[in-house]
Length: 157
Image 1 (cartoon, one colour):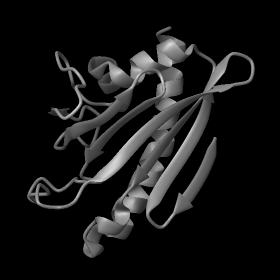
Image 2 (cartoon, rainbow, N blue to C red):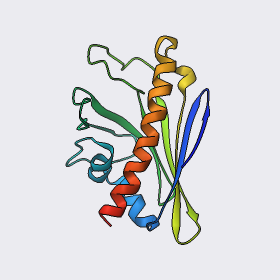
Image 3 (cartoon, rainbow, N blue to C red):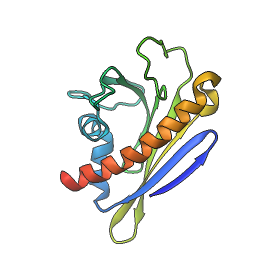
C-alpha cells in the first residue's frame, strides 16, 4: 500500500486482484459501498449532484452519518463525492463549512489486477481549528478503508 500525503491532500493506493467491473460495482453501488465502508445506505443510489445519507455502522461511530453529494461518475474510471471531513461531533452543524473532494480512480495493473487510488483534497479550506485533526484522522481512515474494499471484493466476488 502506497501512502503519499501533502498538506492539502491525502492519497492512498492499493492493488486489488479483482476485475475492474467488480471493483467499480463496490465503489458505485451505494449499498455495496456502505457494506465495506461501514454505513447503512440501503435502498439508495449514487447519482451525480444528489446527496446520499445514512447512519454509520462502524462500532464507536454510530452517532455519525455518512453524508455525501456525488460529484462525478466516469464509467469504470472515476467516482467522486464531496463531504465534510471528520465531522464526528453531533453537536456541531458542519453544513456551512467547505467540503473536501474524495476521488477514486481505477487503473490497470499487472497480472489482471486494478490499482485503486483515493485522493481527498481541499483540506486547506477546512476551518483552521479542526484542519489538522481532520487531515490526520481521515488519512488513517482512508488507509483502513482501502484495506476494507480489497477484502470486501475478495470475500464477495
